[in-house]
Image (cartoon, rainbow, N blue to C red; front, side):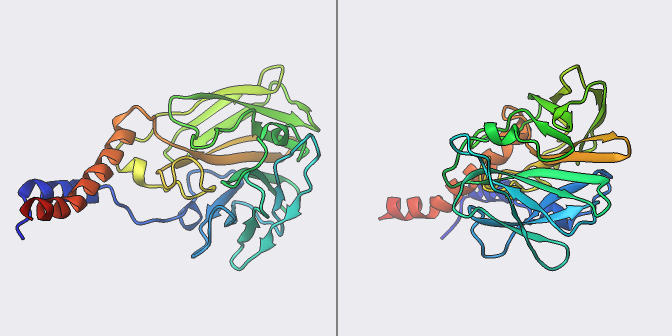
Length: 278
């Protein structure tokens, strides 16, 4: 069977967007010195119920998992199971939606936090975010809804607290794995307004990281980069890290989807050709 030249061209285009799947925990963390909790995929596991997390820039022996709160009842956290090579296994225990992850260094001077999304049904994260889970904390006031995520050119609010109370006039550092580095100052409510940068300089940059990390949330494999928001106060550093994606309306996000769509058309073309011939 002769394959049309157009089909060959479409195949080349689609394959150009396929990248080897890696995790942030396997890569060089030179882009920040802040403490991080990064996802690492579990081979053969269902990401809706289980994943691995690896502390980076942080020496710790424990990662705590805080499930979502339902009906106003405080959540009962549990310790993630320690694995080999400084990794910890987190499980949803049948509870879905966002789970808060928290860890601290052995000397208590470095605090890391993140969230992991289990796609099973679960309570909304509003009450979860209102919990006081660290002496010094920085956290988002809201998290993206299901099938959404933080995106370039979007504006979101984050808050810094000390002993559960807003920490005003504090310097907050905002860094991304694509090279953005900003410093902002909290207002009287301990809040800063962050606009996620459109720092995916090329289509290739937008494909360097893979959205499988941090759970099956936001597009089932859509490529993303990492960000961290950190604050230092009286010798203690606290940080929150997660992922963000390119602007949904830029070529950096649209073209990859187009490439995969064209690839699907190419795979279907032999079937259509045979049907037409028959």
